[in-house]
Length: 472
Image 1 (tube, rainbow, N blue to C red):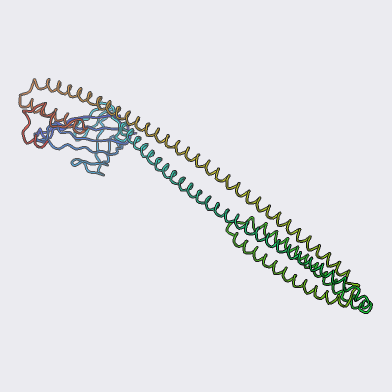
Image 2: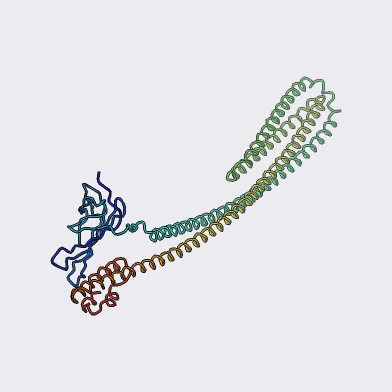
């Protein structure tokens, strides 16, 4: 079973070549059980003959005492993508030492955090996500506010339309009531006229009673037959009155059903009621004509019989009373129908008022919800601002700690360079100093800490040529 390598940073140098420009430092980093990076850092800068640096990233596996790294991100120079780079694990190293291109790489320190696990970047990503959510929530609140405004306008328009329709229905009811009152007055006048005719007929009958008493015996048989016919006619009229009463009841039921339907059917109901009223007026006119015909026949019969005249007049009086009673009942039913319509109209107005109150309450609740959401959005923005300030403070602390660490490393490098320069010739001492400083400078420039030009001028301005300064 292969021994797992120790996670961390491994550094080694390649100085076994004759050309000083090929002296490089290899840095191999194991972040976790999968991710790793390999970097080549020349010890001489490009202007002193050093080769270009490169850095690659990839995934690694342990196979037969070797680290097999599959490159997933290549540099301008160095290994290409989808190629394998092998690092040997010497026996007995316990996974803390590797060999790459005959150079030994030793463990230096634990690995840094992955770029994807950087707390500053994670904090920035979280802050950006919260800002996007706040913007999305704000957009949703605006959309909900617009939807509520549209719904409120639609409800107001619907309430106005219903109010206009109720006014139209009330006006139609008033017109119908006026028409019914006019019909009732016309019927009363007709009854008065019939009563007057009956009185006139009674007077004529009394005048003719004495004159025609002699002919009574001769016309008795004819009178009996005529009486039977009149009785049959009265029975038929009673049946017609009964049918008229049933028709009126059916009309009342239809009107009650029609009042419960929607407002769109109001015109059809009004037309139907007008047609029914016209039909009733035609029926009354027909019956009036029939009554006139009956009265003419009765007058003709009075000329033939006198004994049956009084009985016939009594029957006619009872029929008139029945007509009056029927008309009185119709007036009462009309009044009841009008009262019921008024009650229905009142209930509709109450329902409309209640609906308007509910809409106002709903609008108030919606306004309260909008205010609450606006407060939540403001608090979320304040929280995002606070987190942004914390992130900036954290970045400042991180930059300060990094600068302190780099200053300490630079100081240690300078001390080591000072000790090594005391035993070397001036030319090689300057070159080695520049190589070490170039190594430190390359790492600082790579990490984005500083610009290379001011640092090189500060360290060794006499060792830099004008061409190098122009390139920087």
